Length: 253
Image 1 (cartoon, rainbow, N blue to C red):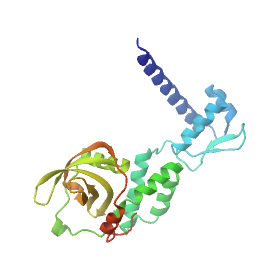
Image 2 (image 1 turned 90 degrees about the horizontal axis):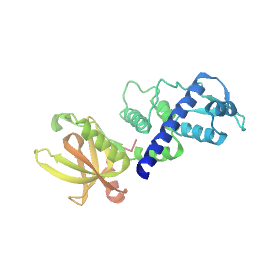
Image 3 (image 1 turned 180 degrees about the vertical axis):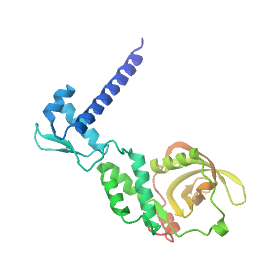
Image 4 (image 1 turned 90 degrees about the vertical axis):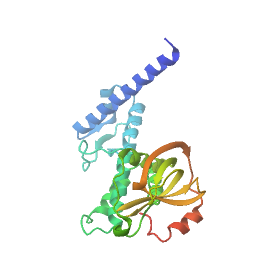
């Protein structure tokens, strides 16, 4: 048996043990209104240092654990938090915040009473480093006026595999290879950097740096027939050019 194989088995075993410990820690916090760090550490058979690391990991995942000061301080879940009802990962929370922001910008006559406060509460649940990334992403999503569907036609359904690639590449700032079908049904292959997403309801566009044209281009998302993430990242650049391109649009969400 090779050393690498043994190392992988040990790593997997360590991961499972930690996951089980975190699950049990959550169970203790759910079942008890108030627990001390000392009593929880004994139940889990871990050191105080390990317990504090586990608690920090849960907090960073968005679980609102309240703690009294001191080594023997009490722990509790925030009474307003519905543990077990809804737990969102980072990308799901991001989708929710952007969806709420889009609704707010569209000035929908319905469902807007608590949109802003709900968006702010979800946003505040992120750790600081995630909030900074979220702020950056929000600035890259733009809303403009409703499109004239009489002249542009109706949007077609976007395949889920294409949608997922475009979304992930936008969030992670990765170059995408796309096959784009224009209004005349001509298909071209492009490598693009998706700097902005633009909603002109009901159409979504990518405003991108196009490697083929070495310039800024916009692509209607429902006309992208295939998409593949490239293992190449990009930084936001040519901001002076993008600013002039998007200044006619409304402010970012």
